[in-house]
Image (cartoon, rainbow, N blue to C red; front, side):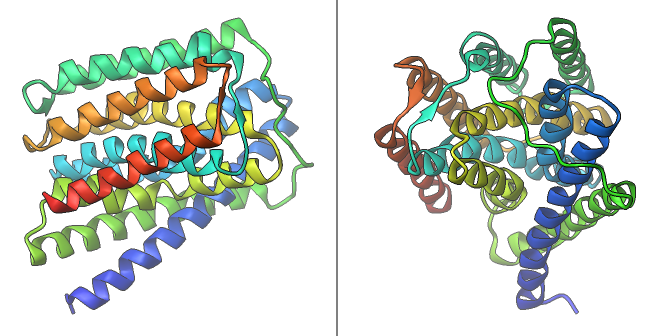
Length: 308
């Protein structure tokens, strides 16, 4: 029976399912990769990054299959805003975040460049299959560059011995992410229709926050353990994955059409990325004060979205 309370409960439950599934996926896949002798650089920039972006992949692709372009693109844009404002800013409140060298000289500039390209692609409020193919080519090129350079991580990723059940846990985690994503899209779309809220707003705020749950957990744990530099690297890497891989896959399935309101959020996403990069350059760190400013920007974006 389709009622708002039931769909609200389904939405909340889907967030928990996605978050737990992503955690199991990341942990088990990382142990398997370590057992196979894959370097920590590859684990951090591929397995872990993909794992934390898995909810975005699930929600965005399923929304694209249903023709819900606003939820597809809005989820990615909203997740990227949340990653670099609310999550990064909130994490910085636990202590000064030292900026890894690779973020300043490689990943940061690359993120700014592909964000600019993304803005150009959406000037007509559509992400065409050709645009998505370009994004996927850039993604493959980026990963290839990482493999060829083989630069060491500034911080090590903790890995524990592989468990006998890790392959099963990986499959289970992936299934939970995809299943939870399906429930999230369905329930969020229903609630949006009932209250007359645009699907873009739902995708860019509530759904985006739900799919960012793994990044929230990862960054807070890293901050509590004193691995602050890893937090920045993971969030920047997740944003790169979202723009290139997530939208690349979703846009190659269907032409994604978004509302004109999307332009404001996309500009905000680009602006926050620039602000974070400037903060990172100043003393190669993000201070508590700067973190508070980012957190305030993220919360202000939420308030602005709902006021619209």
